[in-house]
Image 1 (tube, rainbow, N blue to C red):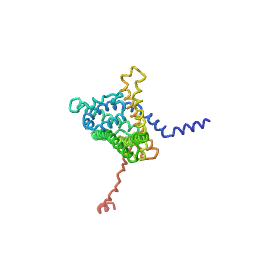
Image 2 (image 1 turned 90 degrees about the vertical axis):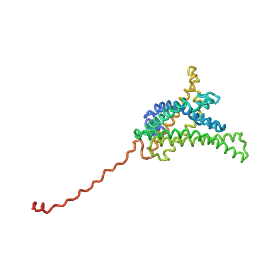
Image 3 (image 1 turned 180 degrees about the vertical axis):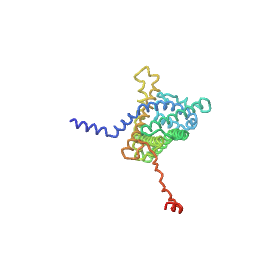
Image 4 (image 1 turned 135 degrees about the vertical axis):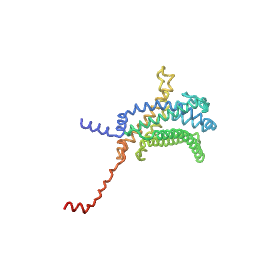
Length: 325
């Protein structure tokens, strides 16, 4: 009986999910995710203000695109924008912001500082999960990469909104061709499934790119894709439960009711950062399991010792030969 129990425990401990969470816990993943969530909370408010100050007129000029952008942001960060059901930021105030004033300049400085700080912390955290040493890349080059990631995230938001509009129009045209009512249950269900699949593809691609850039290590696609896909699925589940997560922070405590939205957002970002780091840990363990070049030990360039050149032979002079005789 005891031997069977030991074998069962050994089998369970050898499972990859168990080893992933062991590694994640041993490398202080929950603590790192908590620190990332605080920085993310600061970054998002400033980024939203600056983003709508710059692109607010363009977004507001097209009502369909405006609704798609608000819906996309609310899907990724529920409870952030007040769309009639409560939120941290009023929608009208958001579109009233303009960047050509002192508050816009300050917000731009805050978003650059906080966003770059988040990516710097995320780089250290992800590299910790991989067991990589501290990144020695030139400071300005690292900041340029982080700035590119900031722009990429903003572009992903706008791209998601555009894809949502395009997919809705395409499905509407397809339903019209086959004679299906757009308001029918089957059409609504199919549109929902297509939307979820598109969101999964985008989230998976973003996570894969994030791991690749932050680690500065070449990760083969068969090793990178499963971890990024798991993270994408987890993000989809969180977005589906977003209202419950945000609303449950202060629901049962009257003392925290006035801070419920901020607390909910802090919990939300904590869960998002946990997903990112656990997905990175899965990729690191997957690399080791498949015998790939292991970033866990750190990559060191192979240095070959210089080839030893034979010493040139010197001719003995005839006078020296006579003296020796």
